[in-house]
Length: 66
Image 1 (cartoon, rainbow, N blue to C red):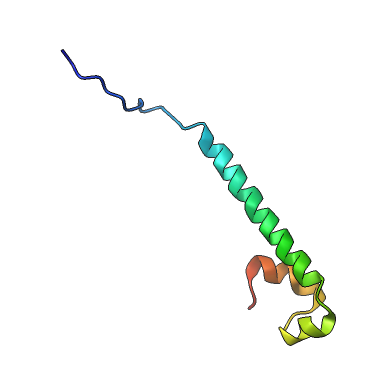
Image 2 (cartoon, rainbow, N blue to C red):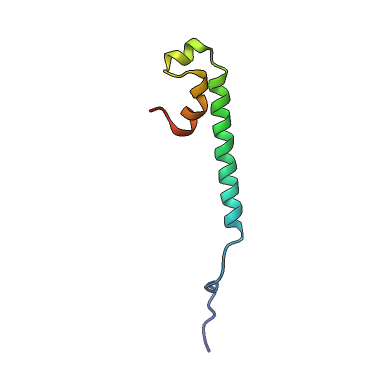
């Protein structure tokens, strides 16, 4: 009698993997938007203290300070 192989066949793809990618991307997008909104609420003199101008907020959040 042969043993039963419980492993999936070679062509098996987990259907939840693409959904997990979308969920992760959505979480990243929300965190990015929250960080941009938080920086946008700061007054100009505080942004100047940390070396940013208002037009650089989006770039600084997405790429970091350079």
